[in-house]
Amino acid sequence: MTNNSTRLDHVVLWVTDPVAAAGFYEEIVGLEPLRVDEFGEGEVSFPSVRVNEETILDLAPRTFAERMKMLPGSADSAGHPVNHVCLALPAGSFDALRARLTEHGVPTSDIGHDSYGARGNAIRSFYFRDPDGNVFEARHYDA
Image: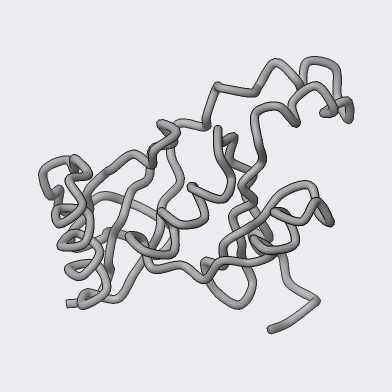
């Protein structure tokens, strides 16, 4: 991990039940949960899940919105997820994720090809929603 380059640190997702959301991301998406016990014990305001060694998703409860006063109108963003968050995976992990989503009855889009992203054109991609309606794209660049 380097501290001297620009990179994505975290994305905050609004969720109804942070513990259930952490469970979804751990069991179905395959991400490591962080601070779930501490959240349950009231020691921290929200749990997170680790995307990689440099990036996490914070799972903020919608009730937390009224405390979002860093910019005018920030509280109004609760319940309005971003368009989507994209996870780039190795090909095997991409297939495993799609299989887990199907196993758990999570609807997915058809597989798309050659969509542009941070590393050029991805070979395959698809979309799914988490239980709170946040939209995710999964993709892989390698063959």
